[in-house]
Image 1 (tube, rainbow, N blue to C red):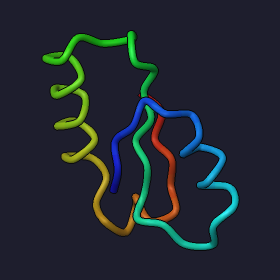
Image 2 (image 1 turned 90 degrees about the vertical axis):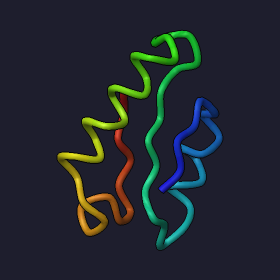
Image 3 (image 1 turned 45 degrees about the vertical axis):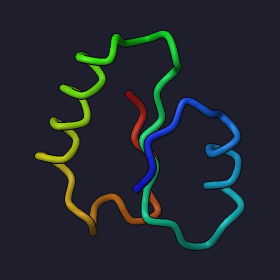
Image 4 (image 1 turned 180 degrees about the vertical axis):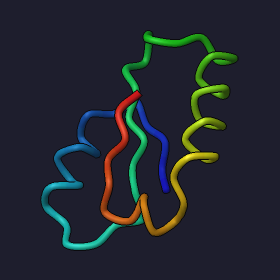
Length: 58
């Protein structure tokens, strides 16, 4: 899984057949503490199978 602020990864997710998962967040939406908290939440709710070929928007 990759965590990114880069919208290009959203385009790539639609172009490739298989990926481990992407967590996307606009760069200025959260402070670092809030972002880490949100990522812990994603980690607790979605497992590897759920994230496969999935884009999670924060």
